[in-house]
Length: 256
Image (cartoon, rainbow, N blue to C red; front, top):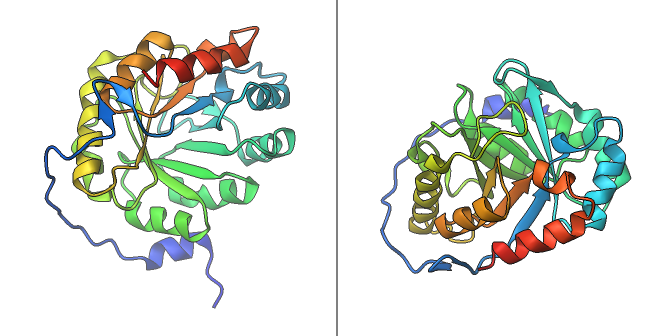
């Protein structure tokens, strides 16, 4: 029988579970030193909207690890941005640059398949809306795509604890989602640390822990010390004439 993505989600049962969290375990961070692989992701939202293909090529030429593409539905967040066609464009423009797609949507389970078909290599979905989170994560993984969960700044870290062995990534928003150019929110740093410790305790010490919002050399260093190892930077990188220098500087700052 041939199931659609939404049908697959509807047939995967949600089974809540609990597991003990052990604190602390040997950690890949020592005095703020990042021993996990570091990823730098320019955010396409900060590129010239009239030259998005060139924005993708700039990121690839600069040595970025992935391109981060924010999808906004004007419902979960008060803005509207991008479609599967933009993900497909990014794949054509920079085919060797993985496409990290963040669905800021109330019903991400209804749209994930469209972005996978367009060329997403990672799909990130929010933990806050009410839908079948476990089923959606399982359906994304079944398509051979990396999956992850996103926490808004005010959402407690414990919201993702039940899913830590079901994801490849957790993204902690360090600004309120929905628009670019906001200032970094340092009150999210304890959340980053709590997620990292919980992931270690759950046996997922290699979890990619990403931050997005107000990221520059100073704030990336703070996030590294808290436990992050992947950094989305929009305004900081796209405002530079030499994006490659910015990528190198961020990589250096986040390996300290």
